Amino acid sequence: MVPILCVGETLEEREAGSTEAKVTGQVRAGLEGVSAGHIGTLVIAYEPIWAIGTGRTATTEDAQAVCASIRATVADLAGADAASTVRIQYGGSVKAANAAELMAQPDIDGALVGGASLEPEGFAKIVQFPLAPA
Image (cartoon, rainbow, N blue to C red; front, side, top):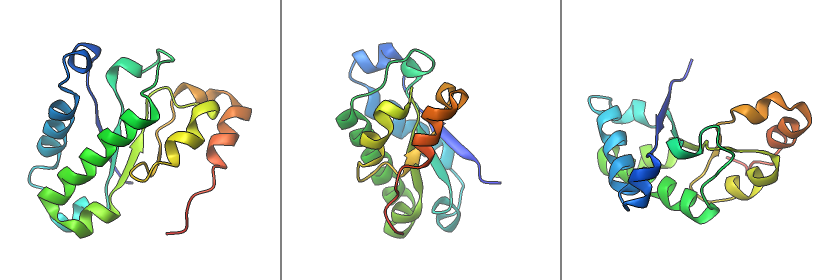
């Protein structure tokens, strides 16, 4: 079993411009005391609180920027190897209509799917997204 460290900001924090500080603070706190070797095997999901169950999602650019910031934080904490191997997912109202664009971003390694997993046809499209070779 692989734990998923979920991080994200509230709408108020987003509107105040403190998304990056909030999320990187959560990553640092969540990984405190974890060895660099173990960090590289984990999954971190950026799941903005304001998007959970609302149908709202971050723009592709915003999701990529936050996931890149998470990867940079992992590199700072555990080194480049851990940063290159940690899986960073986006989870905030992911659905078939936006999954491909989100997962095509360089720092988004997958999706943390919630309610869309209850719609078999749409979920199948998400699951079948072609991943780049490792």
